[in-house]
Image (cartoon, rainbow, N blue to C red; front, side, top):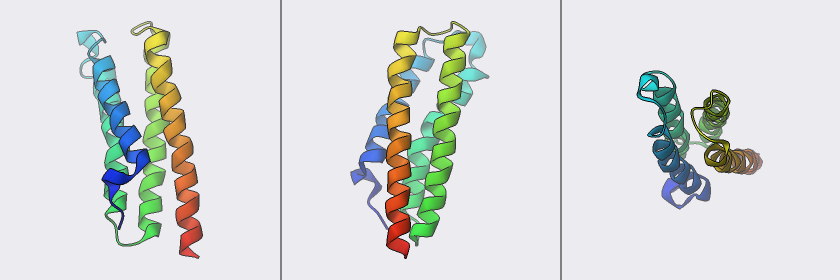
Length: 120
């Protein structure tokens, strides 16, 4: 088991989730049950899956949850790009968050690799 609160990847993912909630408040109300809901769901899913995986009994299970985390990360990137392309939010607001998500994804792949090496 890992203490997820001490994991740098979890801390960054939590910061992103807070930022995404702020950004979602800028979106038009008619997107409340569509894009806003999806964006928030993905943003929460990223740190949540890291935390859930860290509580599993084996690193293999943790790696599986980190894979789900990557899926949510790329899904959120796509949704933010869509919001930008629909001109719902300015690029200068979206781009820093996308850069942070790419960083979390890179950290995640490295973390998975390290966990896999410790299984052997």
